[in-house]
Length: 349
Image (tube, rainbow, N blue to C red; front, side):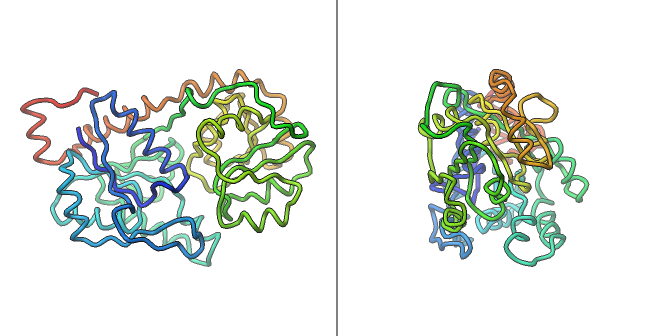
């Protein structure tokens, strides 16, 4: 099966959407499924005014159509609600082609953090965008339930995973006063980093990531250490060297960094909100508390081995199988591909 994924979020961006799509494509090979992508790299782009590191594509309908037809996909999945996602949706609608979508980002909360736009208007637009989709894939049961309550149809579950070959405990010393409280992610207003940086905690606060709020926060909180963006083994070693992973965001739909931290043996301290609550639940691998300082201090007592064992249950292989199976189950295979599959099955999930 050849799956075309349309996404407005792509490299060099560092975020959960890009990470999810990259890891899903890699794991799909074991299912005889192939991913191809329609991304901003094929178009002219401009920098988002409030976030210069994010480039927004300026696609044209004719080029979108040509790229899709050149790809000859068996199925089309729209991962984002941006310009590329909108035009691919239009292409499918005009030709009565089935497609699936996924819900990654709480845009109403993100926009509200930057400008006074009523959330209900944005939710209405998102609901309309996803309405024709054969399956709206959500990362957690709680998010799926919320989307249904907001009027979204055909909502299904697409769980996430973690690469335990990269993220695992190892002896690493950052040579910083202990305990080390780590936060990894985009340094932007919607991540609520001030709630962490303002805490009176012993030891050291470390921020890994980049974004539009970094320079302001570095100046405002000089006692914290800002390492910028880190990737691969370097990032994995930083996880392993910390004592507690702090997740102050209240807007994330999931938070892949939570699983990466847990796989590294790092207990989580977070607010009791949907993202971390969905990932951790009642498992003894983190502390969810409205008092973030109390959560940080209590998390120091959690077993690191319990965190590793919890994360081991979340694999990208299982995540990808769920994704591919959903496409088949909801009938989101393009007509010509369905006929071909009937004649000669091309993959086994």
